[in-house]
Image (cartoon, rainbow over all chains, first blue to last red; front, side):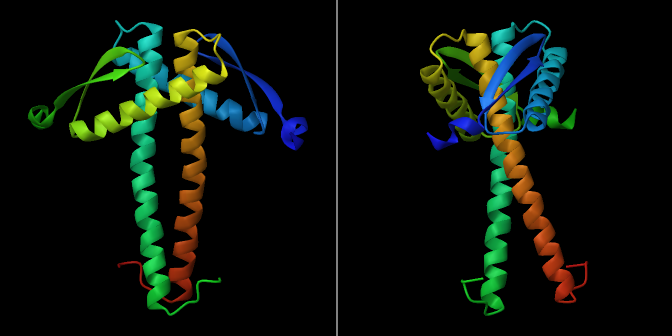
Length: 95
Length: 95
């Protein structure tokens, strides 16, 4: 749609393979994300040298989702804490 | 070490393959994480039917890291906002 023209193609290297990512994110962000995945894969491979690349990539995704869910929990707790503080201070909700 | 006895083995199925995850997390958490990865893989496969499983798994990891980094940014901004509010209220840092 209207977004189409903003789409950028960024080619990155992950675990020795090229990947072209299409999206609205700046190349610097895509590269940072790719580097994170590459690093995680190498870390997990070091601990599990017998893993083939598919299983390695799946376990990398598992690790990252695990971290995501933990951060999500922290984030929700913080949002809740903040909303309680606002109520205690008698703030309006239209801030 | 001392942690060793707390380690649990949980076997999950991701994209039709069994994975045994060893860690301190309860099986319910591991299963939730695995289900999230499985679902993401199937979503991405639907959009890119030509992808082989390794590339699909790597792109799944890329997607999840992308989401993680976005949430991390939000979380840091919220922490900062909160710390500024505390300063404004003259709170001690020993809360």
